[in-house]
Image (cartoon, rainbow, N blue to C red; front, side):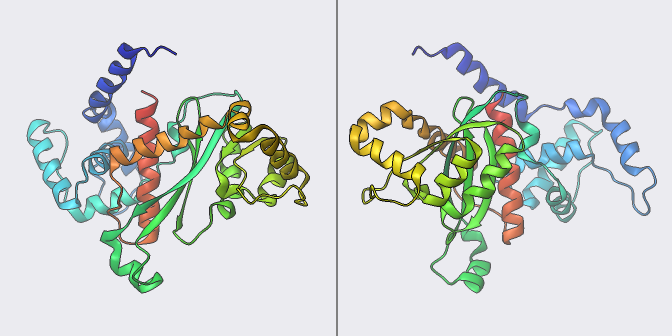
Amino acid sequence: MSVDWQSVDERLVKRGELLLSLDFLESYDRDLRLMNRGKVGRPYMLTERYVEFLSVVRYLFVFPYRQLEGFTRALNRLVPRLPSADYSGLRKRVLDLDLSLYESLRVSDEPVVVAVDSTGVRVHKAGGWVERKYGKKKRYVKIHLAVNVETKEALAMIVTTDGTHDSRVFPQLLRKTERRRKVSKVIMDGAYDSSKVYKLLDQKGIEAVIKPRRNSRLDTPSEPRRRAVTLCKRLGYRGWTKLKGYGKRWSAETAYSTFKRTFGDSCMAKTFQNITKELTTKAYIYNMLVNL
């Protein structure tokens, strides 16, 4: 399949435009009036869209809040309409943002094929919290993504500690995905090879493409899983992969690779609640970049 490199180049160029897009200035005064209508106490000086812009800068360039304060000062000198802000106020406003990754999805009613996987994200800056709660050896959290294999969008995400097994998270991840898309097929690796996962997908009429484990037996009690294991053993792994389209599972690997190359493989937050908020915001930004 040939690649339209001109289109790829243009998408990458647009990412740079997104970083410095000041379109929110056009409605800045109106947005500010609406936010302060009926407010008691000190009025807001930063609109939600400006805070969203600053959160993109923070997460893409790994800015601590004090550096973000310096960024607002420099921006104020260039664009006097945009006020500077102190780091503590910025922290509160950024953490108060409610950016769902669903808001940055393309509009579509078409059934989708989904690849599901998980990856670890280091939380070395949250070492004190991790040590107190889980002991010194646990230094990362897991993000579980459901990825559209065609568009590479993150359709749903769940953040857990590193001791949570992938198959336990899958039912909730599937529910979140189905709120926004009709799922026709789910592609997963051997971590999800369980009778419960097969049963759930079979009940929903969703095709399950799950890599059988090496020790999978033909007399497994689950009928859907027994059919899958039998087919894989009859065709061989390569034949089964080609027939079921298992290679598209790498869409999830591609999404994780892009995610970590864009945002790094660690979190800046220190508590699990804020870690979840940070990763959710990053997923929102990731979808924005993918859909340019």
